Length: 240
Ligand code: UDP
Image (cartoon, rainbow, N blue to C red):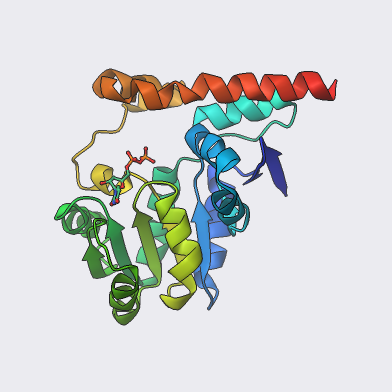
C-alpha cells in the first residue's frame, strides 16, 4: 500500500519487504523502475510537476532518509521505517548474484562507475558487469543505445535527482532492463570515493549528521530537511 507524504507516494515497507518486492520485479520479464526520494526530492517535486509524476509512477518508492520518516509521522501517516537506496541496491545485487545476472552502472564522474563495478564484482562474483558509463553525457539517446546493447537485467542510474528519475521514466523501457534504480551518489560510495556513516550513526538515524560533518558544504541542501518537517506539521494541523 502506498502512503502519501507531502504529495509523494511511498511504499510502506521494511528493508526485508522492499528486498522481496524488488526481487519479484527483477524476476518479471518487463521494465520496472525504483525511486528513493529524500526530503530534497519532496521539495523539488512541489515545483516540478513532471518530477512528481515520475516519482508517483515508479514501481517502488522507498523512503531514503530519516527526514521522510519523520515527516510521515508528523503528518499522521507513519511509515514502517527508512529503506536507504544503498541498502536496497545491496539487496538487489545479492539477488542478481544468485541469478548470475547482468549489471549496468550509469552515472558519476568518469572512471567512478568502472571502479564501483570492480568493487561490486569482488563481493558479488556471479554478476556479469555488462557496462559502465559516466553521467556527464550530452546525447541521451546515444547512451540509451549503449545501455540497450549491453542487455542488462539490473541498471543503476546515478545522475542525481531529478535527472536520473526522468531518464528512467523516459528511456528505461527501451533499455531492455528488468529493473532500474535511481541511486544518486551511490556509485561514489560503491567506488569508495565517499564514505558512508559508521553503523552506529546509521542506527540512530544520524547518517545526515555524519554526512554534514564530513561535507559541511552540503549545509545549504540539508537545510531542506527541517523545511519538510515544518510542512508536514502544517498539514497535520490543517487535518485536525
Ligand atoms: N551526476 C552525474 N551527472 C550529472 C550530475 C550528477 O552523473 O549530470 C552524479 C554525481 O557525480 C554524483 C551523483 O550524480 O555521483 C549525485 O550525487 P548527489 O550527491 O547529488 O546525490 P545524493 O546521493 O545526495 O542523492
